[in-house]
Image 1 (spheres, rainbow, N blue to C red):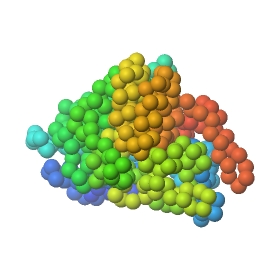
Image 2: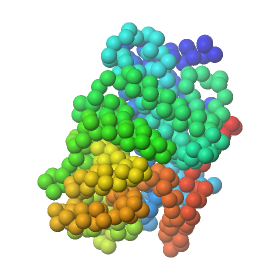
Image 3: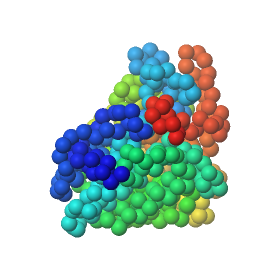
Image 4: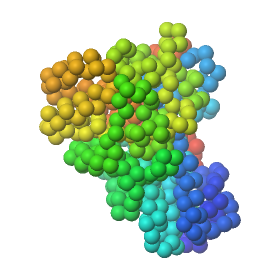
Length: 439
């Protein structure tokens, strides 16, 4: 085992991977052994660069999009759109199981080897801390794509994903439970907290984890686990570093840009360009906005005949994994769950004041202050729906809340994802099952 691990290490610093027929389809190539801080930083940069844009594909499964049936690229997304998971067309785009494990491979090199070779310094600690955070993020996405949503009552027996913490091609990759994977995610974020020492990253390098990004990530983890106090506390810690919001009344600009004051981690593109030309905003999504008073509407959508094209995503300047808007809405949602109703109202109002016209806000302020707990919760969730349209959050929000029924129409035929449908969990890709019989 040790010989195999060292053999792999000899090749990793070339920072490239190609597929092969083993359990993860990962075969590192190259001939340079990383020894210096800069070389290990280059390995982790490759890990960041490899992080897949899989959230575009989840958007296709939600109530946010409608396929353009005249698009040449529709064949790549049709079966995802109609939730045909059991036997999709071979040309259907595959969810990024392998790519996420490739990211984990790079982070494992840093965690297992850089920690031994590099002298202790703030830069070395920052590097290793980022690797722990990025590995946790990859596992978080894997388990939320291919495992059931976290349920404390069943997580110990619900099937999750394989756990790879070492560089060893001989180990058997058997899926672990959802609970085991979440425990590892939290262990990694705890170690990242000990080592990351930058509160924020400079613009242009804000695809890298910082303290603010780590706290934002932890807030999302605990939100999905329904650990309301921990989610609230993590959001508070992130907001203590950056609580800026764009006031769309003064500055009509997309908050998803990596240059935005709201940017916390600028790593992912919520709607890739190829898909952007293949879809319209769904009627449900458009109906969720007040077209005249919601200042996000003209920023997010562009009329195209009777339908609307989406203006978010598809550009390198729009990279957004975490931003301050999410922290406000998470803080509001968790405040309701903690029975801090007044605090929840104050938080959500401080957010929406920046998203609506002054006249509309005055009415909304009155409405929100009169809401009961159920109505307030629904309002906060609908604000998430509007704010994070096609940013890759909707599928996961649906999984963790209502798992509502969705109907998609394609070529005149209706396809239904019923409430609590098993297809709210995505099957392992066929090539992954073929290469790993343990799946």
